[in-house]
Image 1 (spheres, rainbow, N blue to C red):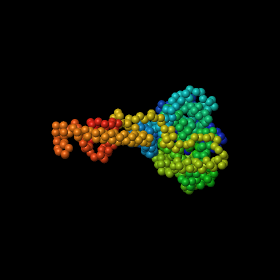
Image 2 (image 1 turned 180 degrees about the vertical axis):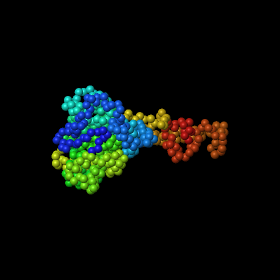
Image 3 (image 1 turned 30 degrees about the vertical axis):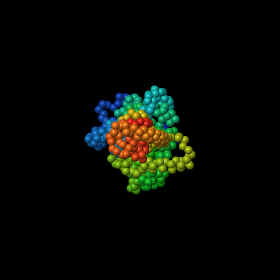
Image 4 (image 1 turned 90 degrees about the vertical axis):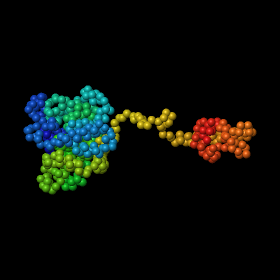
Length: 510
């Protein structure tokens, strides 16, 4: 298989045999990281933009860079998203997905991975947990294996080139902390390259929580004792291959090549030990956003273009030739520009993956019984993780833009309150009618009295025979100014707790 810049070869285990310590056993890598390299390579050695040591001056000029103005525009867009991440994730997740497919700007990649994976939230929920794990001694069995594996991880990267350097020290901290955080899983060698890639983009504590999210949310069960999850996904991959490339599926079936023979390293290391580094980063950008279906898509694209035609199969007549072909995939199929476009176009969704998962899980139970390791459910990308574990927010406070008068209630009335108010209105209307009757009785008495004293009013009142005269405003008028029917309506409109028992109030409302 093609390797990352400066990466040694790494052959997948031909058979699992119930162990996780045989993922890498290359003698060439065993010699790297010796004590003579404690201070790294000589100063004249140059590195590419990713930090890998260059073998020649030509190596660094092979990759095409994104134009500076385009890169700055992308950085500004990502800064805007990260500043209000929860809002974007809730309402504009599709836009985040498109921008991840275009590639996260290098300066913000580490920060974006933390937000996408939910490790930022996880770290905030477990403050000081990493420091606590770092102070603990750790299981001697796992500590010994981890120490032997440190110098095998990207030995030609400037972070890990020196034995005992800061890169290897941080890598040890992260891997040891995980064995303490999940003692039932312990350590698997495939976790080391995953943790190393994370450390290239973020400090040790952030890398640890990001590793936790990968192991628990993105690839649950991959690093467990019997590697059952990776075997199950191998079956899923092989079933999906029938849909993507029937030719490749038929050939692998004919040669009786188990998927675990060629896809173990691909999936468990998330292609970090297989693809060119620029392709690795782009794949991881989409992987953190969309989940494990991206890993399936990469594998399906490589199988399709390596074994997907009769002409290519002429050189793969037997099982050995086929395996050699899969170990040395044509570099043009792994280049960033070609591979990313094929991944985006391939119509394999999380629904397809889950459907096949249920089918293969049923077949597994029929053949082997229940899974021995009960892994948590797999989350398909950032959106699913965000919905399952939302960040902690302060409770929202009511801050109205319109200030109501002090005696006015702004609270929505319940059904019981409205019913009570109706009853009170009926009671007030009843009281008002009774008072109206009392007022009419008083008026009749006043009329009788006013008739007897009409002649003594100095001619200022109207005579009994209908003659006109000057009206005395101190006296109550003989008839109301509005009809009786209208008076009742008026009283209903002007309902209040005050009674209309005085002349003054009566004049006011009439």
